[in-house]
Length: 120
Image 1 (cartoon, rainbow, N blue to C red):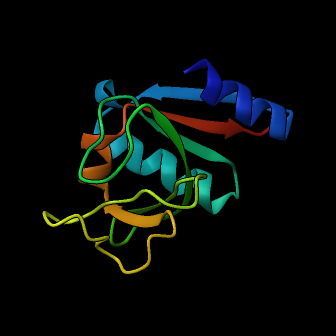
Image 2: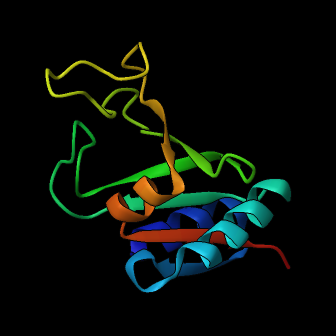
């Protein structure tokens, strides 16, 4: 949690708002992601559980986009690989480039904390 806060604070020089995703309702996450992405603010998310369907646990990801119409979250694993896989271990969206999209509900189920850059 501190790593999420520190990373955004160091990169932006701005304050950071961190939500415990499991204690934040989906509509609030929708509103906050919509605003942050529209305003070009940095957003990161952590997956502190074990690996989940190819998504490495105990790790932080960059939220690169959020589509409020389809309610889909696009994430990037900074390792450049490690993303959602099917039952056979194949990457769902094609290349294993670390970029993948989840529905907001899937995102809420998998990720534990979300950090939003706050502009001064």
